[in-house]
Amino acid sequence: MTWEEFEAQAKICRACGLCETRRNVVIGRGSKNLNRILFVGEGPGENEDRQGVPFVGQAGRLLDLALNALEFLPEDYYIANIVKCRPPQNRIPADDECEACLPLLRQQFLLLRPAIVVSLGAVAAKNLIGKDAKISNVRGQWFNKGGTVFTATYHPAAVLRDEDKKTDFYYDLKQVKTAFDEYRKRK
Image 1: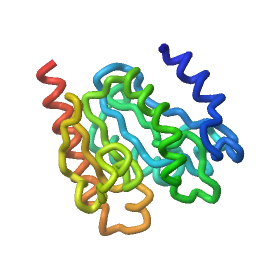
Image 2 (image 1 turned 135 degrees about the horizontal axis):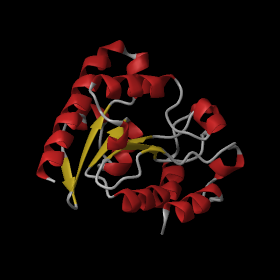
Image 3 (image 1 turned 180 degrees about the vertical axis):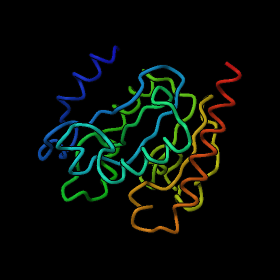
């Protein structure tokens, strides 16, 4: 499947009830180059739903600020979400909504073949690292799954709500940058 075919398929998805209230299907943003970093959040918020692009609200601005400060290059990463449609009132996506949307994320994964996957927050960690994953226990750890390394950190929105998480969030992203730089040197 090509990116164009994937995006056309995603835009008509009706796999769960979130399609009933969406303005836009929020697919992703960033580099579609292979072997990069895939950041995965939980789902689009109001700004993302309006613009059709993930992480464009306050949380996205914080993520961009941190990535820029750590000198990630725009071609180093792609950003997506577990669910592609905004849950009403920005609530946490239900398990069945995540399950319905995971095939789309798996297709993005196949198209990108990322070297590193970073779960941003509890919902992403639970769906990508393990159903029992708690963000406070898995953040900053590394998991090898089929030759791809996974890690997790706090969702930027959680960092905005709790400044005490800021240092850990930045440290986790710094570790991702170090791991990616090492990966790039080996390639």
